[in-house]
Image 1 (cartoon, helix red, strand yellow):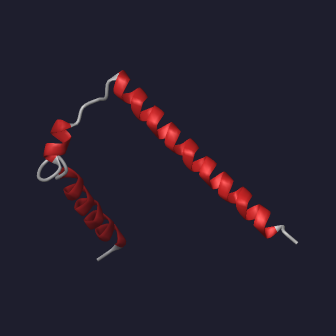
Image 2 (cartoon, rainbow, N blue to C red):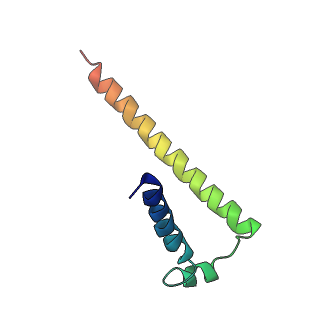
Image 3 (spheres, helix red, strand yellow):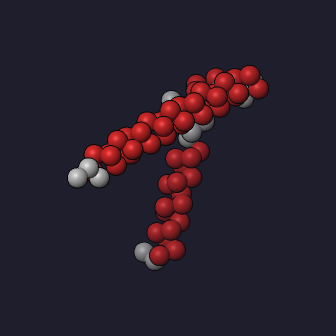
Amino acid sequence: MTIDDKLLDVQDKLERRIGGIGKGKYSRILKMAKKPSRDEYLKVVLITGVGIIILGLLGFFIYLIMGVYIHLP
């Protein structure tokens, strides 16, 4: 079996997997999926942004606290 035959086998397997996405257990999810409205999108962006800011501040405060305790004589 040459390298070309092996590559064709891998490509065929991959195409079979991808071709089955619309059928089976994922089809229901794909049928229910819809594009979010502008309102929904803005809410998701706002909530995600607030979460990132909170985690960043928490990490910064931990960094400050660790810096104070490490530099004590």
